[in-house]
Length: 339
Ligand SMILES: Nc1nc2c(ncn2[C@@H]2O[C@H](COP(=O)(O)OP(=O)(O)OP(=O)(O)O)[C@@H](O)[C@H]2O)c(=O)[nH]1
Image (cartoon, rainbow, N blue to C red; front, side, top):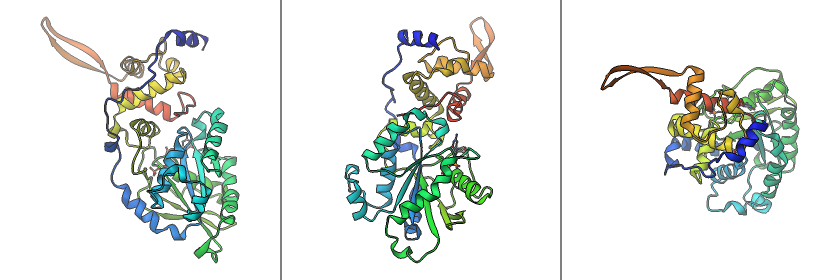
């Protein structure tokens, strides 16, 4: 590690990422409006919204507010105006924010995130790791939700003895995994919701699943929804890196380059050892070439030259990029915060 530190002083890494004029609008599929409409229509049956985000994207507050603002049809109100008064006036449902995939995030940033969220009026926050067989934070969810619900009027649901939560979030953040984890913890029951490594697994809208016996609590699983407008290409790229958007819509090569840029900026150099590189590098072609060679992802192709045919070995850059991105998503390149 000392060696890398010395190299860091000499190496010149990019301080700005060149997105090459890419347009984020093309990355987001149009099928989400239908899901949002159905979710809105079911709001009257819900006591509390559980909004789930990837803990590695601490700008999630922004995304979270965008979804909520869209969700409640209050687009004209600026985000900065979403203070507690605004909250009550508009009768926004009680809300719990879950920052999931904590096992992949740099936990030293926990307090910073909490402060930032509190400053913006978000106080009910829970960090989770839904893949862990016994995650203590999952046990806290039901009591926390009950406290939140009890501190708000239930209106038309006042007579109901059971409670209903709606889980919302961008695709692939772990909504289904959260439901399964809650069932495992509270009911000792197995999977009820299909989990997948690709965004868009939950397509069936609003399945009602029991997650607790005492009190009786249900959760509505919803398909992943993205905010209708992403404010910058960089925000879109972070969402892509976390697996929220299908890779091919953005391009594995540019996602891999953005990953390399992010790792270098944060001095997370474990990729050097993992892929047998000599030193950290800011050149994605060079890094992918080494990855391809290490993984044996190369192709032999014939080339016709002036002096006859020769066989050359070409790295499969796409396969290497895919492996690099996958390693990041699985936490094999260390715990990283993207913001
Ligand atoms: N490391 C880690 N992976 C997780 C965690 N929670 C979920 N995952 C993984 O993230 C991927 C997506 O999980 P899902 O539960 O299907 O996510 P979803 O939000 O329901 O996805 P959509 O149906 O696309 O909206 C899967 O590969 C899960 O195994 C977590 O806490 N830590």
